[in-house]
Length: 473
Image 1 (cartoon, rainbow, N blue to C red):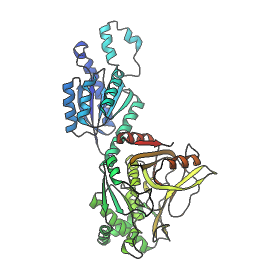
Image 2: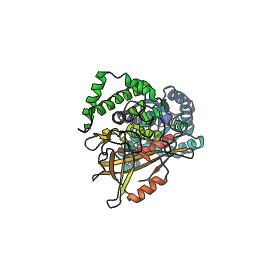
Image 3: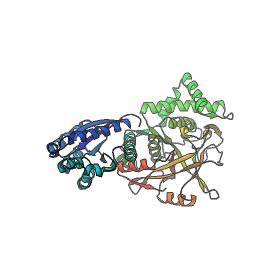
Image 4: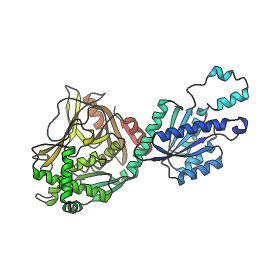
């Protein structure tokens, strides 16, 4: 996780037990301290409220978490606890609750336990292991109250349980990242590309983000203000981060570098964390000159955690931000073709790519024509790194937003050297079935492709966002 995600932690128990079973409360607090340390090791800032064992303490703890603006609460069931010590915390805090049903060990040592002899002491020992007793009670009450909660069941030192906790922390961090992101929208939609048109109000309602509508004239003014030193620095960056083709003319390189500097300035001025763009302009217009030179600069922004989607695909800029937040990259892509002989699907796109997840060099090459778009200029040619990948689309359908995800492999083989991103992907489904199942869900024709298998993280993010997530494979 990048940055600190602030989460609350509290344990629940029953105050009636403490005078009955000597040392039980202290033992359970020790387990809670172990959880707090584990959350910290995973990168979270932990606000530990200690043990809640009465309704009065529950109300105070809810206020405590709300005042400290936690993103979520981890509720540790330390032993049996009454639900009236839990509900007020969640109601007052108003954030997602991750319920930790974690036993001290994988299984009680039955022989040692039964050899204790004293049934009172044995009961105290059992109470240190009976976390699951409260799980259905807490779940039932939360469901009745409409509380957003998620359950992790296991034991304290179990790898599986801590992997689940880590996934929840990552999903919470990405939810906060997207919520706090300012998405720039530069220009307008590609006319007639109906699937790409987005309901910005609906997206803001689901993700909590802000959309900053941008003007081309502001980008022009910033471009006009670029200094010679800034221009030289950008040309040096091109040489460092791209494999610049000898075919690229000096004039085109300078035109792209000027626009890249202006894009950097626009992102800084408007505090943007992502952007979608498209513009045409009339033939020979100054804005056409600018928009036909954005690909190199937008690729650099994407590689440095400000993902940029072409064709004003706002939904896909969100998908790219999600993927980048999970550390997977997220490159702008669409179906290119299928190879039914090799049973793979080809995905790629013209325009900006995610250079940080490339297989081999990222080539900056000239294009004599931008297909379907006006003008000509420099473009990016690359493939996504070979190995496991995840595909993600943000879908809007009949007023509802959802996520669409699939896992596959980026595999070696011939690709189209046409000055675009282009890769070969194999899935657990046949190429034919994958295309049918993915398309039938009804996404826009773009998606974000990132490295690694992270569908489980995306599913958890969807749960936090309270939206459906369709997983194809």
